[in-house]
Image 1 (cartoon, rainbow, N blue to C red):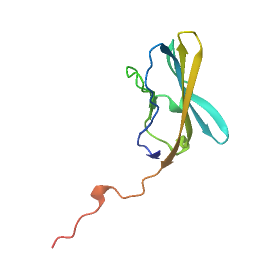
Image 2 (cartoon, rainbow, N blue to C red):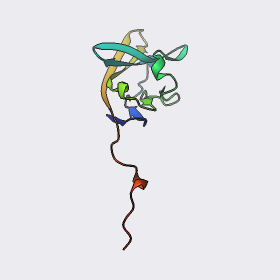
Image 3 (cartoon, one colour):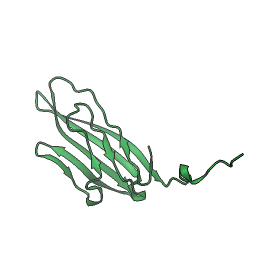
Length: 123
């Protein structure tokens, strides 16, 4: 996924809710410079943003079963990295099932001039 500096991007993480399975946790982590950090976690106690540089810039839909996509706003160049969505469900027999999906994000500066900065010559 390409994101534009100071713009926003949505990292997809969707699944089909199944009967007999209850969602336990959703977490998003980012890997960059060979280290992985958890950004966001949703569990029975609510939503938690665990990295201060993402505070007030990330969100996951609340009332949208099957959608755990991450919206990042006001993108910064250091936001580039590998983002992993991990969803854990509990089945009726109490076993845990985990699914993960990873998306690579590259934040780039838009080098095109603003649209209003040029005018057509008058004929």
